[in-house]
Every structure is written in structure tokens, then in C-alpha cells.
Length: 178
Image (cartoon, rainbow, N blue to C red; front, side):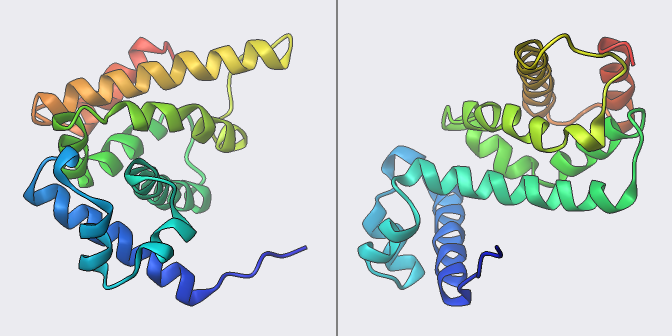
């Protein structure tokens, strides 16, 4: 059964995300109101709540779009485990301004919250060298990897991406002993 995408609904959702991104560049997250987001997007509050439950859910949607961009890219390229960290750091470097905004507004944890799900979705692409005894063990491994990737990314962004994506990829491979 295929799901149909309503182009008008998708456009409205995009406008709300774009409005949130614009406001985040102008002022702190805590100062942004849903009414302001709706006004900037040219939409009514009812439309906002048709797509989102809160301002935070708008940020999660933006993060999800960034992940989808990453996932679509790696899906067609057929990267191996040694190439994946470089692709990862190159991808997030393109979005470093957004990540800095999340960090400045104490919202970077939203990214970590999504990571376990992303790793699960990418499991067939990323693979692993080891077999897991059960699904619970696999979930814990994803949680550990998500936390590690999230932490190293945050540190790199805070440092201003001084190290090259290549250097970060090499360190990550060394840390995960891949």
C-alpha cells in the first residue's frame, strides 16, 4: 500500500521549517513563538498543528530532512564502512551553522535522540563485523554508537570544525576500531 504525499501539505510543512530556520538565525529558540513562525510562513496556527505538535517537533523535522538527504546519498553510492565516517563528517560540515544554533540553544540533544533510529534505518547499509546474540544487544550497540557519533560531532562543531573531515573520519575509525 503506497502512501500519497499531498504537495500542498508538504509545501506548508517546508514553509514552517524554513520560517523556524530564519528565526533561529535572528534570535534564541526560547524567544520564538508559534504565532511568529506561522506569520512568517504565511500560514494559520491550525496548519502548524496539522503538521507539528510543538516548536521542538519542527526542529526534529528539520533534522530528519538532513538525515534523509544523507541517507539518500549513501544509499546510491554503496559506501563501505571505512568510507562512511568521511561522508558523515562532510555531510554535517555542510550543516554546521544549524548544528551551532542547536548547541547555542541547548537543543543539540534532539539530534542524539534521532540517531538510534537513523542507525536502525541504515543498518543494512552500514553493517557490522560482529553478530549480535539478540535484538536487545543490537539496540544497545546502536545506542552506544549513536552517543559516540553525537558526542564527537558536537565537540568538532564546538571547536569550529578545525580538523578536516578526513582527520575526523580517521579518528572515528580508530575509536571504533574498524
